[in-house]
Image (cartoon, rainbow over all chains, first blue to last red; front, side, top):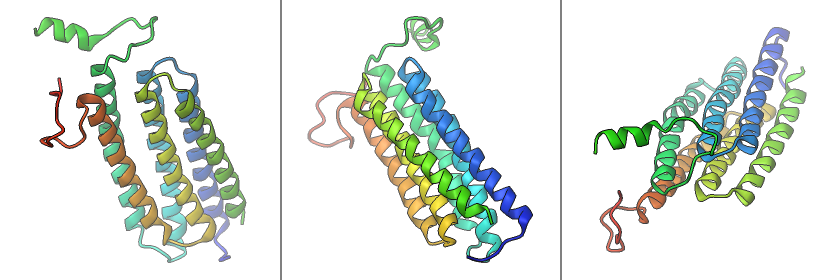
Length: 119
Length: 100
């Protein structure tokens, strides 16, 4: 194990714990929220930020150790930032088209209003 | 040197997160619920690989993380297309129902 400076050690650990916090929050939302759309809302946002924290930690740590230029870490981050919203949007649209109902206590369905207006 | 210890703790937490998401995969009332939970599991696995690369002080695992991220995105898109129209690849002879 190569030694790293104390400040980098603490910074990497904090970023790791921040990423874990966001990942666990997303999973908690996936378990506790009431319909697909709300669950999707919880997981996509939190996993984006969670992986961002972990990738920043890996980038700082591995780049300081001279093991990596940080290019691949940045690539993972950029790819997840680009694909998480696209994938969530596709799943939400498919769920809505397949007729998955929203939670009964929901107050607004803007897509149905839009469809009725533009019929 | 607290980073190896913290990364082990984070790996344990990610394992817990994967197990809790597996409950939603098994229980989930609808198919999109299961797809969202499987996507969450895949992102958690990418995160676990990144943390493992910190733990072992090796940059080789980043390729694995990148490929897993790409595969999970394609799996999500394929599941969405399947839910939408019944076929994954447009224009195939099996295409029976037009996507609405």
